[in-house]
Length: 534
Image 1 (tube, rainbow, N blue to C red):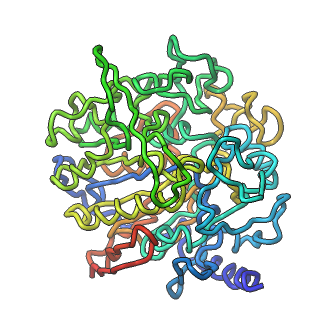
Image 2: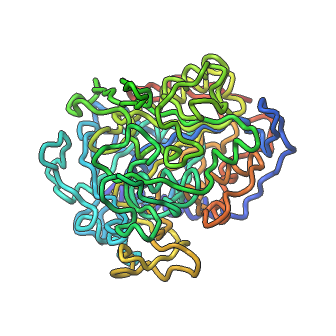
């Protein structure tokens, strides 16, 4: 009953927020800024850190923000006065009057280990059902899986309607209190991890080729389409699975653009360092981890090859997982070719060798992916990373983007605009084979935008306690990097050209009154200290 009343109040607040902060909001373009690479930036941001996590829809983490249940024995969350209401379950009135066969329900901290939902290209479109958003349990819902440590907690396929609040994903809600969040950020297209990873760094999933000798399989369930819609492993990676489909990509990615301009960059991923190397130099990635927070996860292999997008491209791959020649080489082009183990991020941070553009991928047990991770292990890792950056000299000119590769199929109530139509046999948004009509000279199998995903911007230049409602997508992160360093565009059919810009999440016009530096507790996500920057 309380939540019903809150919906009425917060719907009014949301409408006011949209009026005040909509697409027409002014953004002051500052003068070019120098960088340690000797390359000018178009904003005061000289370091971008992209934390790319796994498999969360917007409503799954922010469905009742800013109102938490605050049950006993859980970290308590109370929003600051005048906290804006995002477009979520409360604002939509869909918490207990939902068109799906199962109503949304709260998952608590004891239910952190959930099963992986069905987040394939076709089922995700079927769940959307012409924009009615009413077919999630039967399309993407998955119950408990035999032999898996995960649990559906008695909900069966209805588990897909579950969401967490600020008593579990406490850090994410506290980041939202002090920094900026988008409630209209989407996967560039429907589909799983590889799809999101490729769109993050190149804005397209086309120009894919099955690698000779790889296991038989699909790119788009029809390799001739040349568009990735599944999770093939990268063809330039020794650690790709022997029984999986291997794919290589042609064309440019953001690494190529950064190299041309001489901007330092790197992708840092947990488990990338090999555990063994054969006599012929072939690497094995065998490191594993267990959780002290959720022991039921068991032993989880750290490195996931199809989460590493630069390993699909010959120009940016490090097939044998070679380490850089020295700390000074981090971010430079050497034998590591900008692809590193996650441990080297902390080394670079401590040795003042952080690249201008940094991508971070947690090891599997901490990446948030249901089935092999959980919100509590994810939170501990994420908070430790942000705390470390805020304690470093880099904080003053850094923007941290925290976002996700796909929705995992979790319920979200809002459908994003379809900017890439497709009528491949795998499409199902408006019926079998139907996500509109593939434009002339385009490649089918790129239906999108896909599901809404969380996007949190943590920076002294981030707007404070702010939700942005402009339509953006994964390739918007690519566009921000391109624009900040004047890199130009990928070209071809990359979505970077039409991606919405992320500048409305920032305020570059003031030299004082910048966002505070906050320290969170990795275990609880609660605020420990707040250091004002003005």
